[in-house]
Amino acid sequence: MKILITGCNGQLGNEMQLLEKANPQHTYYNTDVAELDITNEEAINRFVEDNEIDGIVNCAAYTAVDKAEENQELCMKLNATAPEHLAKAIEKRGGWMIQISTDYVFDGTNHRPYVESDAVCPNSTYGRTKLAGEEAVMNNCKQSMIIRTAWLYSTFGNNFVKTMIRLGKEKPELGVIFDQIGTPTYARDLAVAIFAAINEGIVSGIYHFSNEGVISWYDFTKAIHRIAGIKDCRVRPLHTSEYPTPAARPHYSVLDKTKIKQTYGIEIPYWEESLKDCIEKL
Image 1: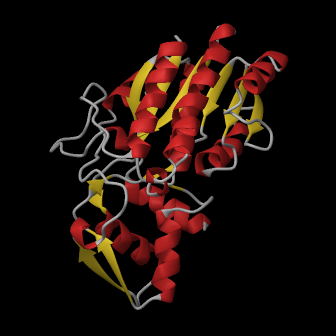
Image 2 (image 1 turned 180 degrees about the horizontal axis):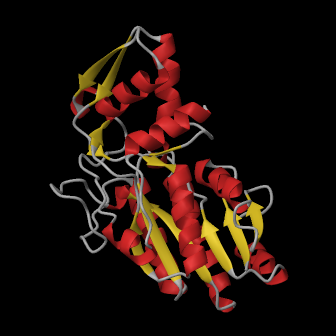
């Protein structure tokens, strides 16, 4: 197959490129904004047709959650309009599309892991635009797969793991939220799951993916410091109210992964095993 990867310079896009070497049966077109402006419908149609693209993995997104509250128009353009353009273009070729989405489509008031059929209720611009992107893809490409993920990190780009390691080395004390619960996702593990779907065949629908286990940001930070060998930084638990942000965060965003595990027969690593793997690479 000829596969278009968008957002190739991001965390997930970079991990996808590393795994392409293990999946040489396909031809990959790795693009970011310099190679393909996904907000330009004409450019997308031309690229997809000229390169005879069979499938698209859209890793591109506006992910600055707090800045999104000020840049709502740009956020909507990247997170909803662009996926719609991609979905329409690949549908013309009878192809498939994988759209990466987020736990932010939920308001975080659940007390059990979210399943794919739970009612969505985003309470931030980021969440609303990502939900609009999900709907645009499903409405315009019959063979489409939505993968919601959460707390993404990797060896690439800026992320929570790298920030906590840096701050842990610079500061004697850190305050970290303890009353927001979820599961970290190593972008490498998500990329592995995406390739499983590509190679097994796209089964249309919404799926959830994160690593296994449940943790707070505070506990995650303590684990990061322990694994990274940082001993001289005291980490204090903070209430969300003590650390106000422009965008509301879900207090509980644990995702149930049963559907993707059963559909593709994949095993998902425990969050701490993947964190160790990432920190060793760093």
